[in-house]
Length: 456
Picture (cartoon, rainbow, N blue to C red):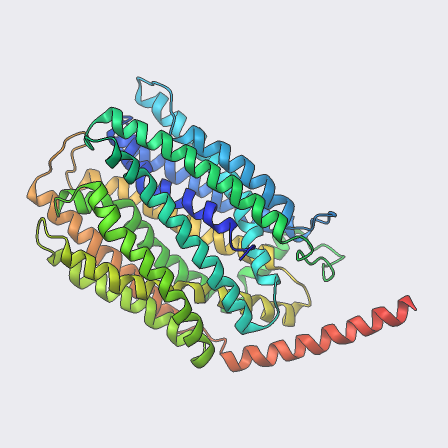
């Protein structure tokens, strides 16, 4: 639980920006949709490129505080400051000035995010060698991730609702500024908590003494076909998830005619509450029947649901999307299994190479996720222009509403389904991984005995 708490702040920042940032800068700050999409995409691409480098750095960091923990603390402090700046832009009159500010500050946000998130997720893979316990660890990480999602999603909407007129520009600015301050405190507190509680758990005993050049190590990871299948499956599904987050408020407001606060409190909140409650079920079923089939069924089911139902919802009715949110929340809980499976791939890599490279693997993993997010964000901005969406207006045509529904439904669901099908080709079975772990355990036990004899 202490390890997982940092994910509260990390995810609160991620969801706060994914849901509210594009809409804030296009409708309130007045930045062109395409320019906003470009600025966000450049920032996320930088974040993606820096992830494997950060993983490599943390793999070879050796301090009295550990090799991952110092970055969790430093990244938390920097990210806390960056969020304050992101939703408090100065008064800018030109498109170039607005674009430059968003690009600069969001680069800062994503750099700080890399510093904290890559070492944090890598540390989770090192806290236990036992495969089922790892699933539980990443279950706790997902639990706190969803707490962060609730904060990043609900706090801005709740503040706006409390101010009265939700269409007032001044009220929207005030709500986003105050929400930014709250999220800033959350990331600061949660990162400090994880830093303090994981003292002594940041294991440095098995680090590699001889460094392989970064590019050589990077290429060798990308030659791992087992890892590539898992990575591409997750990347494709993440594109769908990014589409979903970026366009959700547009869909609910302009297709279904539902206010932001109503959507957040009555649809998105139940979705994440159900997701949190489903975590225990997915941990249990993964222990009972293995990881591969539950992960496939969860993501595939989410995609099928999205394709079918979202274009069909009637205007102004809350109950149908609420039911879909309930079912979707159950399916989405299966995502924790993906991170757990990645630790199995890292074990296989250690079996083949003799090196422990959790940071590099998780860095490349997050790099792939960030590339998919950048693609999804950029495409969202261009699609809004392409479908005829009019920035700054309170109403849109029925044609625009229908096109939003097609993007939010079949457009999003296609990526979930495609990612789940690709995952079926993942070759590392549970039985093979158990054999790998037995060999690693014998190897490490033998190494420990030899080192003990030499010390005597």
